[in-house]
Image 1 (spheres, rainbow, N blue to C red):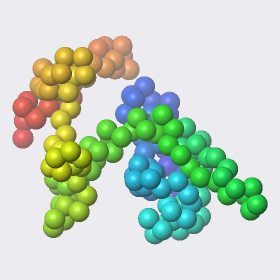
Image 2 (cartoon, one colour):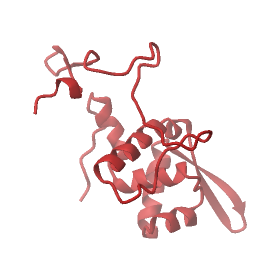
Image 3 (cartoon, rainbow, N blue to C red):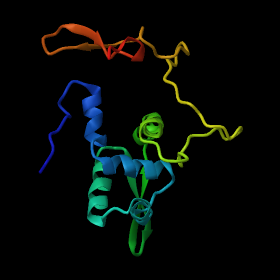
Length: 162
């Protein structure tokens, strides 16, 4: 069954999900961030069926997140490299890593973002790159509804009612 497409929706999050809504796509990108470039590296790292991997790599190339480049002509072999668009997902991938460690922990958190100089774990924080301020309740998402009305939303923890 083919899933619904979000590409015509006005919301940028919905359009981003066009590329990320399949779990295999996210895990393939994870492996690319870990340095995998070749089909067999993705297959080994993920334990994914070859037909599924082929389809997902094709989708990620078509979406502009990976580039396919031939590295051998006899026999023809290709590698898959992160594009600028794909590399720009790094903060999203790191946020997913941190979220997974917090809410789906495993003993010892085997995957942790660390500072290469100190060896200490890094705690991610979302900031405004212009001011350096932490994103907080005073920052809102402004969006236009279908009726043309502009609303502010996307509450942060300080102002979410439980």
